[in-house]
Figure 1: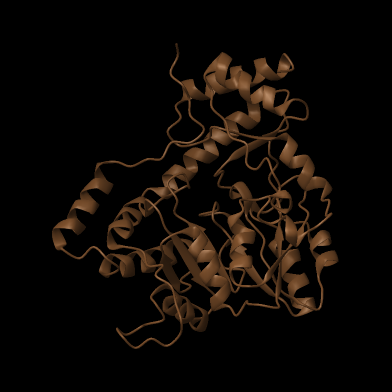
Figure 2: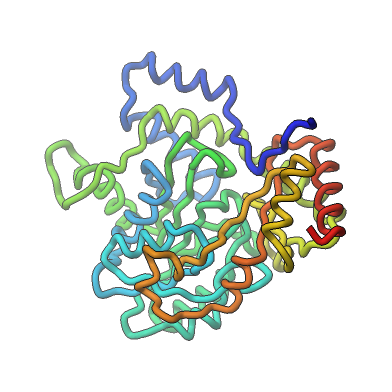
Length: 365
């Protein structure tokens, strides 16, 4: 049997192990100098020097970012339903209400027209997701936010290094969150980064992550324990030196798939957008689940379905949107399949993926 090609493969090597060992030998393993260095390096690398606050997960990053930006009970934040539940969860955790809008069929990101239709007197902000590594329509969403006096927040969990019109994601909103979960384009083992538009939001986030303190025992607000450890930061610092090469490998792999796949709808890239392919997501209009099964069982090719149930239909979130129907969201949830695109793939793997997809699509799954 040919080796199975997984949908994702985290890359942790000797450099990361050595960095962890260095921290362990230092005796300082909680939040300390490694975290501070990682924040500075991440800021310079990805978000044009914006202040960055490291936290223990991407979800914490969204939650604390929203709180730091002043979101709370009585507010509404417009979000996509076609994303991981953490996006809407983070809004609900502040006491605010997530309001779901539809997506564009090409990029799977928020449709500005649907967003505009969802704005009410209680709307505080708009939080697009740069889904799969493709930037959302930030120019139009920013103009919409400005015209209605709303804030713009960014869920950039999957979009390290993505850009629109040469401007990096994470620099458009009042804050942005990048996830450092193991399967993301880079990892710290677990963690998240909040990139803030100003020092006020950054300071609020620092207080919230550390029990409300900047100085020990001088608690200014009620906060959380959402700190990143120096162990995790040391891993992230190593990964930061490698992520650009990994991104180019992802983009190369995506180009090969774009050119050779048949029988599926490959992901288009919007004008001026830089896609970093956290996922390479195709559409299979008929029998998506049979397609996934055949890829695995007949060809040893893994894939993922992100996301089969829209947020507004999840038992945890449906109370926020009773009776809501979002046409493009429902369609995407029924059709999407993410194929392997990770930088561990070699040319032989790409050939196998192409052969498998074309065979299964040609046979109608």
